[in-house]
Length: 367
Image (cartoon, rainbow, N blue to C red):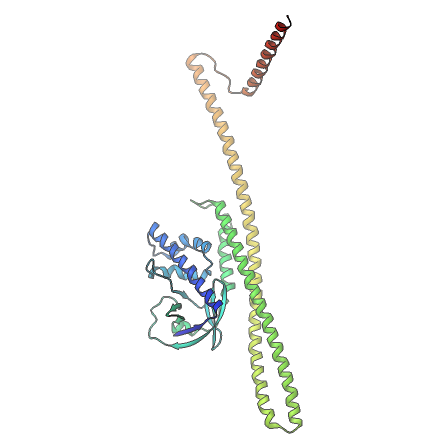
């Protein structure tokens, strides 16, 4: 199935910026392929590239995951004019509008069904395509049969924060091999901050949607009440011919209100989920900051211990050398301790010699 989108200029800018970030992701994967060789193991590829992609792009986590598999079917260097989608990244909202996840949040865009094509060879449920000045979403029929929207933003946030928490919990950072634990925790904190920003933005959008829906419901309630007054006036004047269409309009408005109330319940649920995500984010950040401080203290103590141990080792080597000299020559060597006291006495002795010579010069000049 093919959907032709009619995006506004702002929507089109968000789509193009998302494609640009997706091109950056493909470039990162191309670099890894050249440096380390292509990998058919998605788990290994995820470990090698995921953190870098999330740091250098603003792509939703789900799109990054789909892109890891999508890269295998692309030719390096070709322009990026399409990207994969699934039910978390797009959703049919009504017969005229759908929602699409971009790097600038979800966009509600008008669409029209333009036709059907036999077969669906793509690994993704759907694909966003820019082609011949058209913006299309091509969908496998199995994917199109699921119009219900999943709360991508909240699920993505909870999934991301769960991965970050798992990365810094239970001392796993301390056990990292071949990696800088402090740098890893600092990167986790930066990612937590990014997740927190996403959670706040999602909560803000849900709150704005709640206010909009409440205002629309109140408007419909006022209109239904106004129509009720008109119906009573028409019946009082014996104009049933006028009253029947008005009653039909009132029934239609009540149906609209019911749909809006359902949407309002979904918006409230989104707000609650975003609140839970923010609580998880804040807790994870506190844990990561505490772990980072502990790691830094541990590293400082370790560095100090290494310095102290080096000093002890040097003293031991000196003592061993002096002992060897004494055994070979039969002459006692310099003691390994008391060096600072010897230096202070030497300084005092030199100062005394200077004073004595100064006194002699003074005595000679007076005579």
